[in-house]
Image (cartoon, rainbow over all chains, first blue to last red; front, side):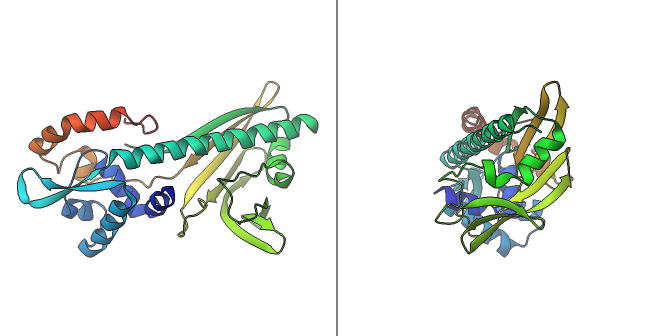
Length: 106
Length: 153
């Protein structure tokens, strides 16, 4: 599933959407305007984010006919865990570099 | 507001110019293959070639990233494509080499967020009504409490 998450985040507009939703749920129209995207383009981005598990769609509490998008905790926890893996990966590689240099520092 | 920067620091037992050379020209001599971070089905060696970071196995090769900064002994930066991602993910790795007693302090940052348009109301948290915020307030505090990696400023 992390592949779907990373593919979803590979797009700068979708990363912007994640950042905006970090402040609170929003309607698609607000997201489109904030990201300077057309409504159809934003619809496609939101579908990809939903399928990746990073976001969920909920009824707007103020208007039952409208929908708002929100971040999904489980998706973000998976992303956080992957970032921990990336941190471990680089720590491991830099330890290898330090060993290499210790054998040949000049 | 929300940021994903993985930051790792390490001390290296050699001067900055030597560390930079070891990182770039000698990459294939110290890099540890990692099953979770490799791009070819048979993990190969990583090398910097002609402004790119490449993984090679035999006749096969994959371009993992482009060099974005190349200042020997000081700063190295390159784009980084996550393995398994079908579209190129433009995350970025910045490495700084700082002279330090005993050698070099190497600081590596792996980052990837795009900036939000500065003047948009959503950036200030408006565009979402108080009622909406109130309703989800408890849910949000629980969500943010669970996210150690994301920094809220």
